[in-house]
Length: 138
Image 1 (cartoon, helix red, strand yellow):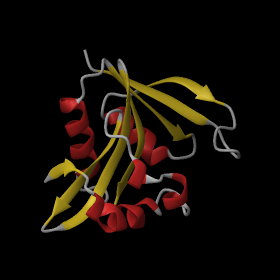
Image 2 (cartoon, helix red, strand yellow):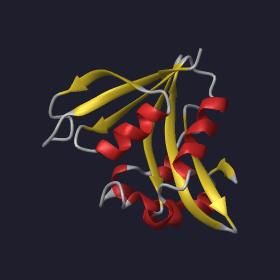
Image 3 (cartoon, one colour):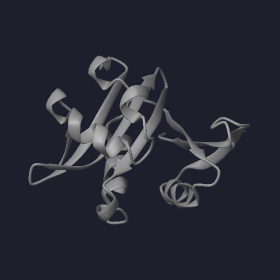
């Protein structure tokens, strides 16, 4: 089941977030998330959170900030379901995201889901470039 997160989910989300960034909790203070323009969907099975997708609305654009899936449940369609849920529920015209240029698995995942490279941000991650990807919703 996919749903909006609630504050009780935060320990699980922060734990999963460490897969993305060791200091995820310090970087993304989700307690102060402004749901008017930012939110987070969780994927839950039998009371366990197995993945999440964090995003922000910016008028006609939705920015994906993070997608994380429990390591042992990766490549089983959870990320795809979260992404489709966002696509089906957004009111934006397009979705943007940045991905590390060395993260080939993520790039292939996004390409498979209709995203195209539109730009690069030099040294965005300090040690490597970010690939900016976009998917039109229209």
